Image 1 (cartoon, rainbow, N blue to C red):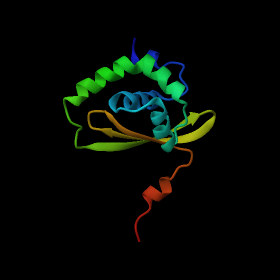
Image 2: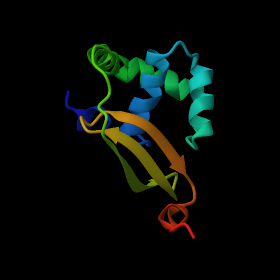
Image 3: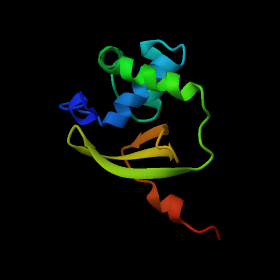
Image 4: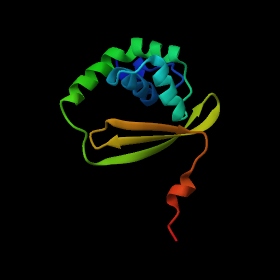
Length: 122
């Protein structure tokens, strides 16, 4: 099963789903703790949704974690910004990605704070 077909018909982007499942399998967290961590980053999902994602996508993400745990993160990374529609509302998705393409962190915001980032210090 290829990646696009695996995530087909899901409301959230594949990277968000993968991040939630990664948190659950990588650290000794409960489903509710993962729900709280995602809510802190502006991603509102229920612990039952995280459980369903873990059941469906857990094996492939756990295999990725096992492969990555032998190596280290690369020292170069970049920040991606994408506008996504969640529930018919516009949101800004920020992802920190290392040079190998591994997602380091994800943040979703309902407002863009782009002007704050691009301002020059006085």
